[in-house]
Amino acid sequence: MIYVHWIVLVVYITVIIATMIAVLMDNRQPAKTMAWLLVLFFLPVIGIVLYIFFGQNIRKQRLMSQRSLDELSKRSMLEFAEQENLHIPESQRPLMRLFAKQNLALPFKDNLVEIYTSGYEFFPALLQEIGKAQKHIHIDSFIFCDDALGYLISDALIDKSQKGVEVRIIYDDVGSWSSHNQFFERMRDAGIDVHAFMPVKFPAFTSKANYRNHRKLIVIDGRVGFIGGMNIALRYVKGFGKQSWRDTHLRIEGGGVYAIQRDFLVDWYFVDRTLLTDRKYYPPINASICNDCLMQVVSSSPTDAWSAIMQGYVRIILQARHYVYMESPYFLPTEPILFAMRTAALAGVDIRLMIPFKGDSRLVDWASRSYVEETVEAGVKVYLYKAGFNHSKLLVSDDYISTVGSTNVDFRSFEDDFEANAFFYDKEMSLRIKKVYIDDERQSVFLEDYYHKILHKPFIHRLWESLLRLFSPLM
View (cartoon, rainbow, N blue to C red):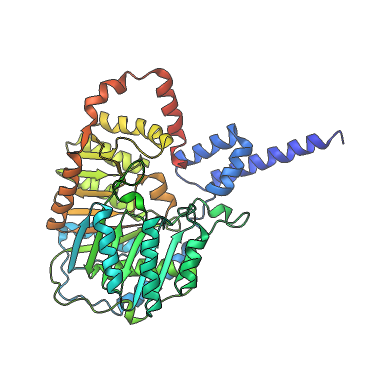
C-alpha cells in the first residue's frame, strides 16, 4: 500500500503528458495550442475533463466522408440547376472560385431577397410561408426554444404535417439544452421527423460537445429559403426578456434556394443517414425572377481542411479599396482576420466594426477588449451598439459584396462550429446591407469617445483582460 500513491502519481503525470502531446500533435494554430497547454499545466484535472469534452480535434476524422457527401449532394443538385446566361464579373471571380473550390459552393443568379432586422418581421413571414407549404418544410436551427414562440411555430408545423407535408427539423443538442425533450417528442408524435445534431450523452460523444451546428437554415417547398442569424426564440421579439436581441435574417426566392437546400440536406444526411436527392427538393426556379443578383451559400465546419468563410472574410478585407463594415456579437478574431483588419486599416481603408455595448457574456466581453484596442490602434473604427444586444452577423464592402449568416468573428465560428453564410455579388444588395449597418450605427456610440478611459484602466483590469486573451481560442 505504501507505493499506491506513487503509482497514482505516475499514472496521473503520464495522462497529463500524453494529453499535452496529443494537443501538440494536432498542429493547430499556435495560439490555440498554447491555450490548451496552459489549461492542462495550471488546471491539470479540470483541464483533462475540459479537453475530453471540448478540445479533441475532429477536423481530420471526417474529412474524406464529408467531401464525398458534399460531392454527391452537389451532383444531385446539378441535375436540376440549369442557369442560362450566367455571367460572373471578372473582379468577383477569384473569391467565387475560392468558395467553389473550398466548399463546392455554386453561384446562383436570379434572386429576390428580403431583409429582416427584427423578430417582428421575420417570424410572421416564416409563419406565412409555413402556412403556404404544400410538399416539404426543412428547418435547421441552433436553438429551437420551447417558449411561447417555439410552441406557436411547432403548432403550425404539426398542422402541416397532419395535412401530409413532409416536415424535417434539425436542432443543436447543446444550443437547445434549455428546451425540454417533451417539446420535441410532441412534434415527433405528430409525424414530424426531428433530430438533435450530435447529441451529447455521457460518456459517449463527449469529445463532440465542442462542435456544434450553429447554422440557421429554413427551406419551404424548395422555392423559399431563409438564412441568417436568428434562432427560433422569443428573445428576438422586443419587449420580452431583460434585453431584446437585434439580428439580421434573409428571405431568399430564386436560384439561391438550391444552395440553402443543399446545405440542409447535407446536414440531414449527417443526422439521419438518408441522402435525399429527389427532384421535388429542387423544383424549377420561378421564371418571373430575372435579375443579376448573384449569390453563393458558403458553409464551414470542423470537418473542412480550411475554413472557407474565414478565408473569404480575409480576402474581402484585404482586397477592399474604400470600406468594409462589419457587425458581430462577439469579437475574438483569429490571427488571419486580425492581420487583415490591421493591414487594411493602416492602408487607409475605412474599416468599421460594430459590437454590442453590453454583451451576453462577461468573460467574452473581457477577453475581446484587448483585441478591440489593438484594432483601434491600427485605425479601425469601432462602434458599440446600445439599443439591445446586437446578435447580427454581416459584412459589406465597396458597394459590391455583402454577406449575412450565422458566422461570428471569433475562433469558435471559424474553427469549431458548423456555419453558413450567404454571399452576394450585387450593388443593390450591398447598398441595402450597407443601409442596415448605417441605421445600426446611428444607435451606437463611437468607441474613440471612450478610448482615453481605456488607456487609463487600472493595472489589475488590464492584467485580467490579457490573461483572458490567452484563453480566447477556447471560448
